[in-house]
Image (tube, rainbow, N blue to C red; front, side, top):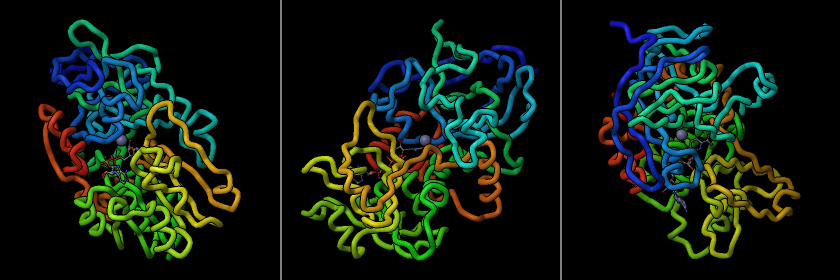
Length: 383
Ligand code: PAD
Ligand code: ZN
């Protein structure tokens, strides 16, 4: 019996209030309107950006269905949709690509005008939501909402991938892997023989390491306050790992000494102001300050806390350092996601080492507890 054109009742994890566990609910998912696509989610990963919403540092309208790193199968399409059809394997795109706006037409820009990361409307483009629970409208999250058995997205926020792709693995291409890998190869443009330092060895930081290694960096230093993260970082390409808590000096001073006046490329993959920049005397780590003063490049990948500002000593820039940042590793999502999936199928890189736990939507709260306790890299929930 076809479900096209009908409301689907299914299971979803709803966040009703900040700093509270998800509630597993039966939700109603309305059929897609014009230019929208309804997707059966098959696998979805847990990313720190979802947790930033729960703790209030990434502000979104509530109640909401979070989740943005996923893969699934198209269930039905609205009028006018041409790029996907029912049965296609797809990845939802939290950083969409409409291909019409000024940014999409720019050769490298990737913050499409249709993105909901910078706006946080919590709706689809048409201005309303397709989720209802207990008679209330539930918001969408950054064009995706994947902690649900079915979701609806705008056509510009979904792309077809190879029909042989293992969805329970390539879901990581939807966020963590691509963000980290692209930050190294596309945003920093890591060069062969260079020295890199990566602050934060979670799923995204480890993907930065994979990118640095594939770009030919000869020295890759991992920095984390949780030494349990070091073994995996070394397995993936870190040549050494250090813990700021083991040193009395600020970690940027340690790194500058270790690397004869600073590194070529540094990456902040935590989302803390003190690890981005040396902002106060108590700061332990600072990605920008450990770059070589003449040519070092620092890439901000971590999502910073809401409404906080960095204070930068202009001398750090005047001498020649570059500070940059990027969403989704600088990739243009519709163009690049299918290519990254093909790269996985061609065994150009492996996603398996990043997946430490496989779970189900019912166990979502345990999955988040493990991330917060530093015990997991990526938990993938399969439906
Ligand atoms: P994670 O929590 O798995 O990893 C963060 C790591 O940082 C952990 O291993 C921590 O132990 C470590 N850490 C925490 N505090 C410190 C400290 N003071 N000094 C050194 N290490 C520390 O997160 P993740 O890998 O899923 O995500 C990392 C960040 O990237 C996070 O802020 C997330 O929101 C952001 C992100 N950005 C994008 C983007 O498009 N720019 C996409 C996805 C995730
Ligand atoms: Zn993410």
